[in-house]
Image (tube, rainbow, N blue to C red; front, side):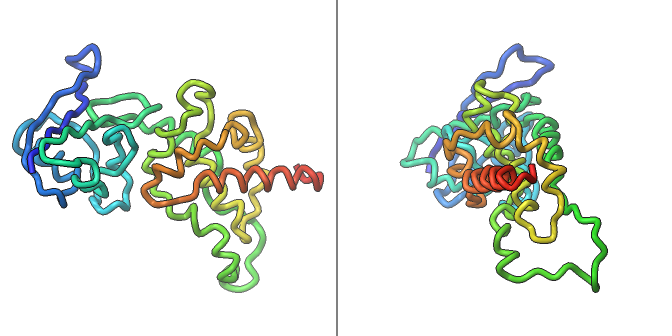
Length: 241
């Protein structure tokens, strides 16, 4: 199968602006887009820059925009984005993050916002025995957001960050906060409240569902954001926030 990869290129040492370059290659429909990119890098243009690691949809490092939608290159098959022989597949870096080179972006701000919600268990209470026991039902309450691999696809896809509120903490950060807020062992609600109960926190979300649509792990991100909103509202009604 013949396809053309239309890849955004940018070298800050040589280019004033990003541009697109086309690479005609032959692939199998069942090949992953990551395989196609590696073919270009290994045999056509070794200067092409992009991130990859595990190549199994676990590390989240190869998030990029493929034919206009955020995806993981290692989980995207050529047949998913190329309808027929001769198809052109457009590949771009994630949005809302500074461009470093080609398909690589600077993720420092993404992780800085993620760290603001304190994405770790907070509990200073003494442990009665060896561990804090939790029922399967309690564990199930926060199972969904534990699947996050921090690929930043949801951050890139969020329309709020397009300019309406560029300071929005982002869907990944709120989903990670939800992972601990719904954990029966956690006691950090009040410590996360200042960040979450803020115009740039959960209330910036307008339920566009783009984050949920592009999540490669199938996390119901918008649902987790709304559950967090509900938890904050109930806490205020009880006078706890």
